[in-house]
Length: 319
Ligand SMILES: NC(=O)c1ccc[n+]([C@@H]2O[C@H](COP(=O)([O-])OP(=O)(O)OC[C@H]3O[C@@H](n4cnc5c(N)ncnc54)[C@H](OP(=O)(O)O)[C@@H]3O)[C@@H](O)[C@H]2O)c1
Image (cartoon, rainbow, N blue to C red; front, side, top):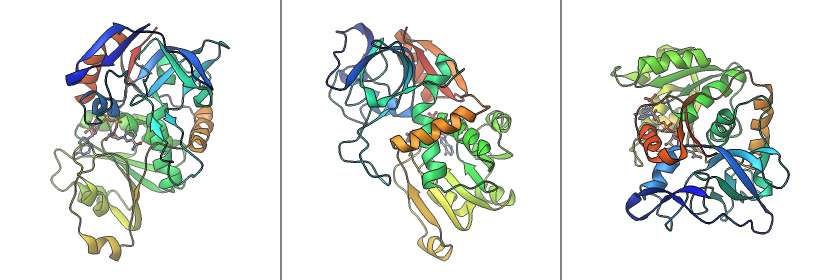
């Protein structure tokens, strides 16, 4: 089959590799589309130092070779029995296990779900990892209720666009921040009520507070924890799931406990979370925002776009 593999030094090669052989409990899926995630950059640049060569990619949609069913892949492998955290055996598809930047994948049958009715192949491959992360952040971890206000940082990110759509579907009021006025405008089209440009507004948490009490913040930026805590109302929650702009922070401790605030971490989601997400998807009037679709052979260029300016999800055509 044709696949894209990461080699030493982060070199990406589109090459012919042996077809994967399904192990016990696994089946072959002929991939139509693979979705890109920021994690792929961490894998391809060696921040996550997995053995190489490796086929990256966590998201994919395609056809089961044995049954002909059209499926999407749950990208979390071996979550385990607990809902509050995953088991030590847990792993995200696409490192160290070969992922979806390929024509074929051998994957556990339990990780396959029917793809959403009426969605395109692009939309089907765009949502699993990012929407699952957004779903668990908003609901099981963030406890978002209808009528509450959630602030989503970095409106342009793949996870953020889906978080805006899911929170809107759940009847929440949604605010966003972004470095771009254009992305804020596009977020309003997805259901957000208002946004603040964090790049041009000196005290953006103050601007957010002026928009009204915020119950919950989704923070994937990392460097912004203090500002996120500054945005929420007393008793509010901040859910963190990324570190796009930094892995270390300094916090003022007193406002955290004076304010009775909750700072919560989350990571992707359990199979139960995925079931909950798929129930919302079945009722959704929205579709994932597709930024662009690239040939599998052009994965390197697609990753460069992911690293830079984009809005929504990037896809690879694997077929
Ligand atoms: N824990 C998990 O399970 C999990 C799962 C998926 C993703 N993640 C993490 O979530 C983050 C987003 O992932 P993704 O794939 O959706 O990323 P992405 O599409 O590459 O988007 C990154 C976005 O971050 C925003 N950003 C950068 N600096 C910012 C700042 N100082 N303040 C606010 N926003 C800022 C930018 O938004 P604007 O362009 O709008 O400014 C940018 O578009 C990454 O850190 C990723 O590692 C975690």
